[in-house]
Length: 479
View 1 (cartoon, rainbow, N blue to C red):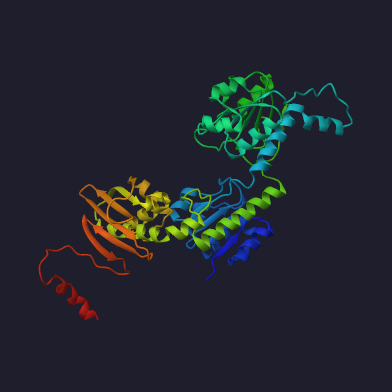
View 2: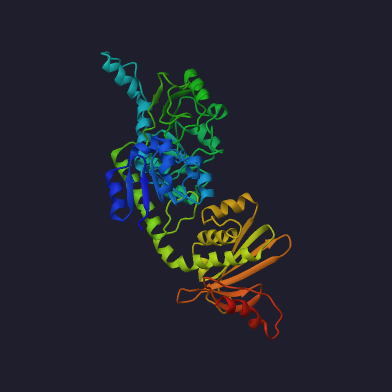
């Protein structure tokens, strides 16, 4: 039976056709995204949900999504998806972080020009029949210092474009190495140094607890007098009240904002200030970007539903189509190991230790970890899967550790899983033979060789005659 996908927001027809071409049963109804009750009514019928920003995937919606396996957001922002609730439900949440990168970076550069040359105000004045050349005195970008906060994908493109404009670029990004900064042609600095040196500041970071109000009142006070600030990343990165004060006092010469703390933004402290350029979150608003992210999300969702490949997931390790083929037997083995030891364990689990030996240690161990933990958790929660298991384990305070080592022993590769409770430790090991079939090779330190079947019985007994016969009698009666 073909997987079913609901497209509840406006996506391009090209993207919808991709689903059809891949053999997926797709329903394209953009009206559902704005109708919470209708979405609640139909969501249980679908394996996948493709959205943009209009559809709000809440915990209530997810409670009825009993067949849902994947949510695909065409775009980078997933503020409209309850990711923790999706994870607990076992639903993968994907986005498309790179499809609109160039468009967003170009908008930041355009806003920088607009702030430097007062273009919107000059346009409005000229439309009004005025000719106020002396009023709109701007500044050049050439030879100015641009401070880039966040030098990732979009920030990196902005750096490249700014260097092309012959600007001096300094960047603050805790994850930017000195080597990478040198390759980009920028100077890595700490935040306070960037604030003190930059003539222009542009932000390109996500909104997190650490970045919220990164340009606070205190931070703005450290900036160079006459600085110009651009934000095309996320609302909430700048204290808008403090920015309005700095703009009014003249400490900040101008600002250009595409995003706001509350959106849709119908009011803001910076609105109607003459030295502020504002746009309604247009960073990704080009025909090329919208087509790119729509196509990308359709391909990602199709790949997952048809092959198990996971790309750009926010709550699941990524697994390529090639990895999915090679790792398939090992993922099954990890799940079997977890299920087996989980059924042996009556006490609350305190820790899970996973050892990867030999060739398997070079595989995507994050995905294998998820499979093993899911197997363990299924003993008490049959509905758990690779997405929800790590979340449940974390909620219960279970510590998960991973060890990798080069080949040792009789097997080219094997996985050993140890579960720790307050009372004892239990371990099991397994491997995958060349025929692709998983096998148990050790249980509680005892070496064995057992092909894994659909139904298995495990017993612990004294090595005395008659045990096998005793075990076989009940099954003989059933037969």
